[in-house]
Each structure stands twice: as C-alpha cells, then as structure tokens.
Length: 317
Ligand code: ASP
Image (tube, rainbow, N blue to C red; front, side):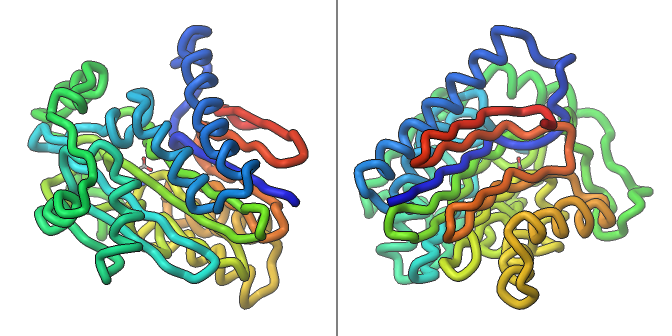
C-alpha cells in the first residue's frame, strides 16, 4: 500500500546569496531527519496523524526553523507559539495559540484534539491543560536562539509602523524583517488512504502581544479532509487568514472539481498574489498526489513516498 509524506520549514526570501554550503547541509540534514521520522511511522502502517506529529516534532526541536525551540521573539522579547493538527478521516482538529514554554506545541495541539472536548485553546488555559495532561514544558533558555534574538534586537526599537500601508487592514503592521517565515508543517497520506495535516510556528518576528497567525486557525493555515486534501501553509499569516487559504484549496477541489495542483496554484499563485500575500503551502490528496507551491523566492520543503521518491529543496525548481 502507498503512502506519501510532505514537509515544509517555511517560505520567504530564500536566495543563494543568504546560503552557504554549510548552511545548505544543515537544512538538508534537518529536513531529511524530519522526513525519516514521519516515514518510519508510515512504512510501519502507522497513521497519517502520527507521521505528521513525528515529522513536526523533529522540526520543532531544530533551531533552524521558527517553531518550538527556534521560535522567533515577540515585541516583548518572548516566544509565543501556535500549532494545529487536523485528521482528514474524521475532521477532528486540535489547535493551540499563544503558548510559552511548551517544548512541542504540536503534541499539545494533538492532546487538545483528543482530550479537551474543544478544538482551540489559548494562552493560560492551554498551559493549564498542558500541565494536567503531562505535556512537556521547557525553560526560557531552551528557546533562546542568538540569531533570532539578534534579528529581533535589530528591529524592535525602530519605528517600523507602516501607517501608509496600501492595505487598510494592515495599517500599523510591521514588515517582516528578513522576509523569511520559517514555520514548519507536514501533511501525509497513510497506507489506509487517510490524510492528516499539522503546522507549528513561533509566528512573525516582533509580533504584538497576543497576535495569532494563520497556522493554528483551522481552514486558514491548516486543514485536512479525506475527500479532498491535507494542507499546511506558511507565509504572512494576516493574508492567509483573510484568504482562508487551506480550506479554499479544499473547496476548489470539492465544489469545482479542480485537481490538487490546480487548486493550490489558484490560491497561492493567483488569489494571494493579487492580495499581496507572500508564502506557500504543502498539500497531499487521497491518491497520494502532492504539491509544494509558493509565490515567494523559496520554501524549505521535502517529500518522500512509498515508491522511494524523495525531493528536498528550497529554491524555486
Ligand atoms: N504563517 C505564520 C504566521 O503568520 C508565519 C510563517 O509561516 O512563518 O504566524
């Protein structure tokens, strides 16, 4: 029986000028390890959901990415994380927003799906639930990352308010300092033909206290439905929220009969571009077709399937 796993480590201005051989190697290893963790689950007949969580845990533990350990700093100099999972076989979902000191927010999202009686918990309530469920916490030092910190220090005090932003809804929004997003995500189809999606992020550098992006919002940054596809997004969350990107792709397949690739292209390369939204997504459908689609300069991404196919890349191909 067939399986497919696709992962991403964020989209954005990823160009040869900002890379070197050593860094490329680090990204390659990190993406390979995450693919291996998810594949281990899938090749042993495990569920798409377990594979998605296993792959994302690896990416959250890797400081190269803006999730878990590598989460960026907020305006207050803190790390506030968002994550979500969705199971396409039963449309169950779990999401968490604005949590601090949770070692693997993706595991908390799955706990919320399975044991909270709710879909979405935030802040202190999510932390209390995590404590009750024995979810692992980590101290502030665990999340401290010199490079992220320096990126944040560079912009935290400058007057970055763009009061003349061309998009009224983003008046007062801050630009993304390096146009790199770094969120992580995974989508999978397992041997039973079930789909699952997950996304985890530290959000946007210097984000306001309490800001929540698209990643944990079911239908915006994360969505899975066996009838259509599983999607995990990365990019400027404010646009992805308003374009309801992940569910939009699913709807184009369900109601308009578009193929996975046509639906992804329509939303990422047409609708989002017209709105001015930068980013991308990974997607898989119930036949194991997959797509890794972005309108930014690059997206860290990788895939493996049961036919032995592997593809790891970050620039446009
Ligand atoms: N979409 C995420 C957010 O806006 C950022 C990212 O993809 O890196 O929070």
